Length: 318
Image (cartoon, rainbow, N blue to C red):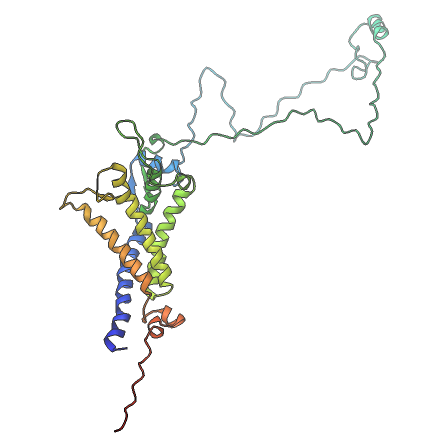
């Protein structure tokens, strides 16, 4: 292989790796290190998705009513009520053992004579084979309804990581708002992947893919797998932010591109996403090149793809 060919096969993947790593490291680290302020309605939106928690509100203190008796202080020591003096029964009588101890003697005799004898029936013997029926009513614990947060629960808004906004974008793509005429647009995301905890899980998956894959591209380790992950991230981003909304609105160019004005800066976002997607796919197909850990560990693919030298024809002497 000529020197310029070997140099090109080594440097082209290296430049692609450096470019992709710089862009995605910046984007991924920004999503986890910075914070952004959300208005109360968007903060309640993320709380209903299970992405953030509602701020803890202290319980309101009740003002005592002067007309009512004061409430007991839980911190105060318990007050022992005064002991009631025991009354001494008359001599020869025991009210604890005689239920008619307070009656006159003649009335006490008549009362005892008129009372029937107390007989306690013995419980019937139960056989070992006869099960005892359970007469206790069956109780089921009702499930508490899930709380729905509103903007009133977030009077000051909320501070969140920018990467968590991906969860809101996923839920909005799966449940689009109805049009002005009452029709429902085409959903851009499966409803099953928009239920809890998928929006939060997918938001962190996209963010960590950008950071981890970009770090692996710097050293050239698992390059094809990392580049394929970045290409997938860009494909989802183009679908949810550019191509999908254009098809959903029905105002497209070539049937799938958004119908922006010719000099609109919105094209820059689409072209940037497509450029990153194409570069990642090229790196996934090409590999890391010779200047990488993949070449040191798994061997350089350029050396194995080098064509065998052609055999020279023998020169016959006259």
